Image 1 (cartoon, rainbow, N blue to C red):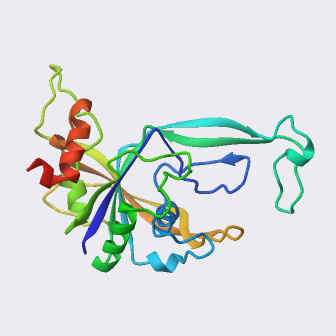
Image 2 (image 1 turned 45 degrees about the horizontal axis):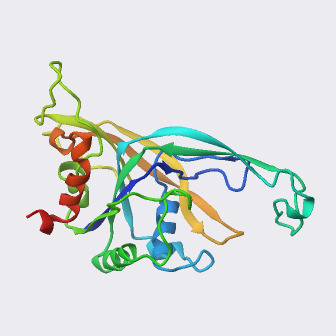
Image 3 (image 1 turned 180 degrees about the horizontal axis):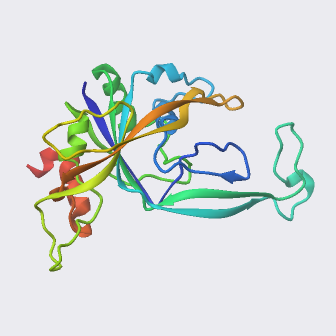
Length: 264
């Protein structure tokens, strides 16, 4: 089954997993399925109360962790020092009367590449929407704007193979003992699969860590959001060292990959 490729990069990302309207707004260490499906629905112009998670049920997602980022916490207040009628509103329609304090978690300088696998008709619809979104995409929170290039490829025959062998890696290649950068060899990179990855006996052994996450959307309704759990298979896979390179060449390598006709 074919797919498209998204690159999720920016100064800040935040993929809430467990908290909703609580003082501590957490972030998962990788993009959640709920957030990605919400991004697709927004790009298609589908509002929260209209979004149907079943519309995206056939999507399969694979995440390559180029850079996990650094977790930071923002101490955030709303409504301090104002009269009660100007403080933050409650769900019952009144006002809290005091400052609302939250601690919002973010991933700083993280980069993920996501392979979205689906039927060709679905991919065409999503690629068109992501190219010209109705509502702008963001990385978990509206303040987290994605870098370009965002949509790396609209269509590839084997998206997981692309992640393993062709998509430029947003990471500096490790240096050898003499201080030089080598292109030969491999770099070990973390992947997250929704299905157990195939095992190639000819390659290095890839350990599989099975984790459960609560990010399968059931409803996006503004006052009735709900999720269920899904299982992920976390692996560390060797990819060609040549996918990495000096930071100053990264943008050009990404542009060449996203627009192969321009670099030909």
